[in-house]
Image (cartoon, rainbow, N blue to C red; front, side, top):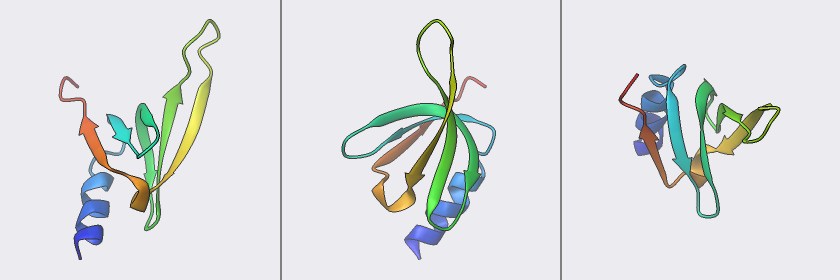
Length: 71
């Protein structure tokens, strides 16, 4: 039940900038999709070209999500 509430909450953040932490990584980007199993966000790579990467994170690997409230 808690997992379904978490997924519903994540869906509210589609289009928002978030930070997502797993046990081994920290990602920052805009949420573009939330399914039953994954969160996808676009992450701007640092550097000259500013490539746009799509990051796929299994929801069960997420430790925390922080939402950018300044939007």
